[in-house]
Image (tube, rainbow, N blue to C red; front, side):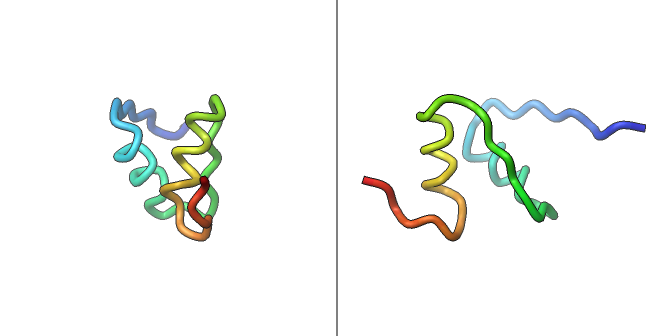
Length: 48
């Protein structure tokens, strides 16, 4: 069986859900999307 698919419209909630129990989180998308993810993931200094 494959993994379940979950659709979450709010980016912050989707990122939080992806981190639960994960060793690695892969974020794909535009620079805007990846920048938002880096700002929220632990271990990355603030950008700017």
